[in-house]
Length: 171
Picture 1 (cartoon, rainbow, N blue to C red):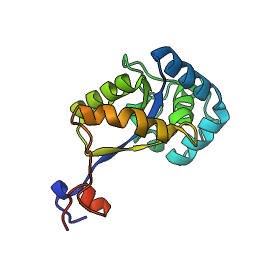
Picture 2 (picture 1 turned 135 degrees about the vertical axis):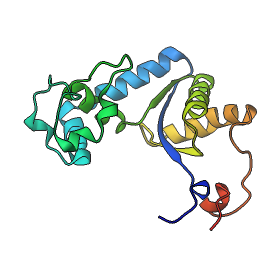
Picture 3 (picture 1 turned 180 degrees about the vertical axis):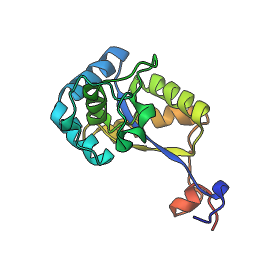
């Protein structure tokens, strides 16, 4: 768009799920994810892909699909071990977090995961998608932000009044 790439900020979506213990955080994640109906995930993902996934069998492998609308997002159809995900698995994941990574654990563990993510992929920050409201953002601000600040990974003050100021972007 004509702007120097060094003057653009890259923000990633993140869905933190915080507990006082790893077990509590995993329990929160399981409860949240279990509430999402498969049909909801299918509808959301169908809209995002501009392709009606209900035309496919839930057991179909997504990576083997040849439709152009499905080829654009091919990388997200893989499990961590490289195997293809099924339509059902992709729709469920998309419904649970709109395809964003879920960072699950104690405040220190979530901070560890965020650090590892940014050390690997870079970026200038993140946008939070809470799993419940009110409360999830406040938990992140009260519990994870201080941990990131102690590690020198999150600012303690702002130098300006605009978003551009906050990301130190120029015209």
